[in-house]
Amino acid sequence: MSTSAPRTATVTDRLVEANRAYAARFTDPGMGARPVLGVAVVACMDARLDLHAALGLELGDCHTIRNAGGVVTDDTIRSLTISQRALGTCSVALIHHTGCGLQTLTEDFRHELELEVGQRPAWAVEAFRDVDQDVRQSMQRVRTSPFLPHTDDVRGFVFDVTTGLLREIDPNS
Image (cartoon, rainbow, N blue to C red; front, side):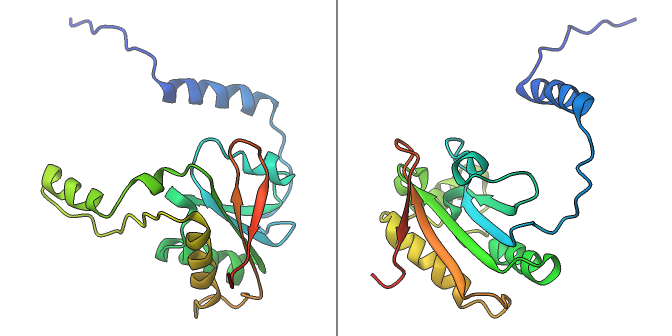
């Protein structure tokens, strides 16, 4: 008979336990998948951005699409297309932020990964130096996508991680 050492609790174990407590007091809100406000928010995955709190959103108000940098990639367009065409959103808010980690990387990151693992990633890092310009590029990618029927209400912002304020980016500057 073998005995194994007790498993050390992981962060994921903590999350699962927190979910049990959440589920114990959970009641079905009785809502569908269509966002109440008809908006999709594309934002960086940075842990300092509490989007619902920062934007005054409640459960069911919006679709939230997050990735490194909040950049508009093919997968972001995929999610926005489903959000608009299948689930009724018409507005898009793009939120980048100050002090983003993508401002410290370059496309050399892909080369370094290739050297380490023996395979070059198929995806681009999408690193940037100027956060305002990257927001403009993201707005342009959304506005020019042939898959998105609703491109009139696309706005971009930079969230300041030290003040919590949004600063709107003029797409034509």
